[in-house]
Length: 87
Image (cartoon, rainbow, N blue to C red; front, side):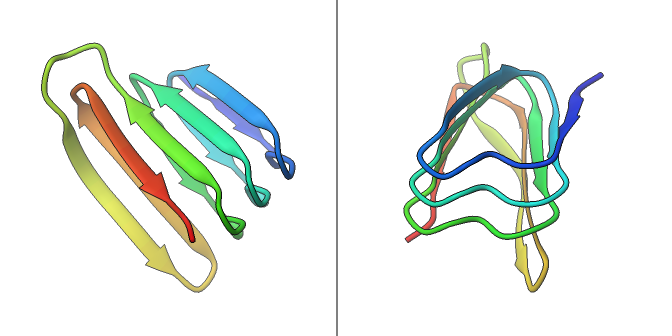
């Protein structure tokens, strides 16, 4: 079971183990680290946001990365490390 939060602010460092659902947006220059979970963002992802998906297993499996007009979804099914950088 994960958490639901409104937003991750500009320049914020956010780290969580498990699933995260952001109902608004991730701010510019934010650093987001999700361990052993998934990330769903209903709003925008700011410029230069750094999103890292990390898992305790030795290989990475990215189940989906979706960009569309109102949301970004990144999901890691297991593995070591996956980084998404928004430029």
